[in-house]
Length: 154
Image (cartoon, rainbow, N blue to C red; front, side):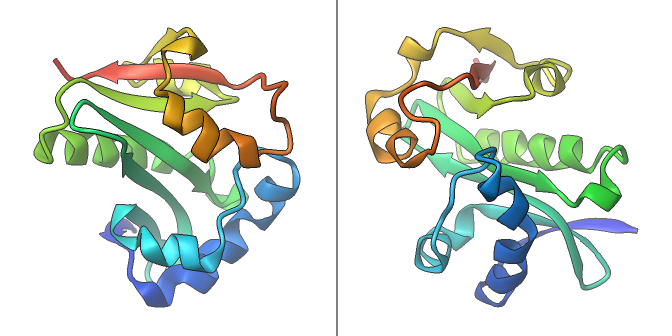
């Protein structure tokens, strides 16, 4: 049975291991162990017993905008709606935190998020600090073919 739990610092090595291949492919941004530790409260994990099978993070940009980051599900567990559960958890967390307007995502899998109620937006609508804080670290920057989508909380 898969359960969703908030991450703790002892989960970081398994989290880093799970994303290695996606980082190499440029699908997920590389985040150092220190960066993950600094933001550990943002992460929710999908576990089967003690085994980490997926995770995501909800990053708060401002009172108005949050972002779903680093969504990953172990290849052996894909197709079991774990990713959907993680995204729904993050959206509910944004609501509980009273994010005022939108939950943003940048993705190579827009159809997955559209099925969950996200709508595509122009990348120019993304908060500027997002581009300079994260996107500049990407191996694809500045030629990026990720799609920006938002979930409207209003």
